[in-house]
Length: 134
Image 1 (cartoon, rainbow, N blue to C red):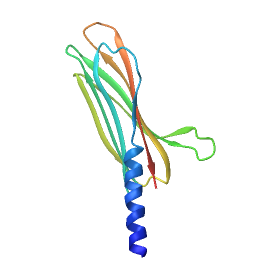
Image 2 (cartoon, rainbow, N blue to C red):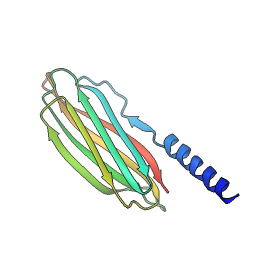
Image 3 (cartoon, one colour):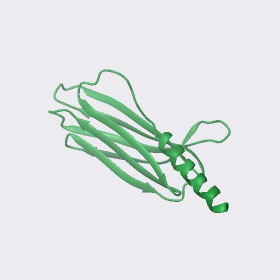
Image 4 (cartoon, rainbow, N blue to C red):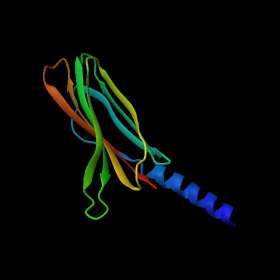
């Protein structure tokens, strides 16, 4: 009986975490960026953080900040757990990082980037994903 309850609980937890790993991308016209993605998943209490920004042909530089945030249990406001900032002189930015020992709660991974392309005008993009840690 206990094994069935544990198995069911783990299965529901996995299903819920997959369903809650939703992403959002700021809707607007994007001239210099072909793809912006943020993916947050938990393996036990370790946050797996992944962000990708692809510029279109002619992109010369991408400056991105990726921030892992945790929602305050009382106010619901997100507070920074850790962040990374990086500039790449190419048309592709990627970040894969792990953050161990996260405490239970709701988390958000936000990537904000400035993409510099052939038009000469910098373009800002944002993507976010959400996941709970149990």
